[in-house]
Length: 224
Image 1: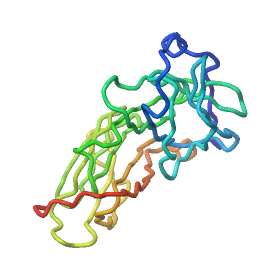
Image 2 (image 1 turned 180 degrees about the vertical axis):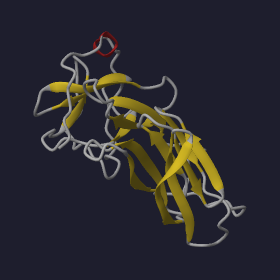
Image 3 (image 1 turned 45 degrees about the horizontal axis):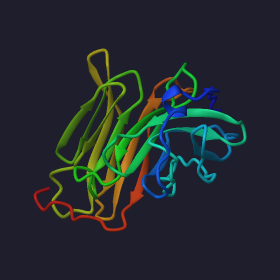
Image 4 (image 1 turned 60 degrees about the vertical axis):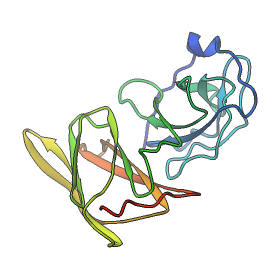
């Protein structure tokens, strides 16, 4: 069972944020994991709040309209803040990944642009929320990712094949230990998010993958 502490006050930067015009900015939320009794959330400042919405962990939320670029994600049922968000000044559409920080209360947010030309159909955004470096191979593309870091990885070297070989692992004591070896689907209509985190029961690094279906996907490069 996931246990989650909460932050019970707004940060000053959130409370004093200037309100936005309706529809000026939108965000989509995605949580690494969610306690069962969290309930619906709103995006709020002291002066205004959005319509209630579910906080998803298996897909991106519908687009939500925050009342300012600095706001709190507020649990309606518990009447407490679970994360404080500061959006960049540039851009008007964002994805907010909500990560469990371990012993600290609430969620730790990671903000990425929704329309990022470097994050395209077939790509995977990895975030390492574990305490060890993770490594992987996607086709012929290799990557490593230190704790508390995220990056987009583009699979390579599989040509026109529908699937490519993927291996995910963790670096432990100077050695790379395999987490999973699998066939991963090549897609022209989705991009993916993969969270690495410490399994609270098995006490080892594991991962979870989430698909995002694109309305107007860009073609995968033919050089793969």
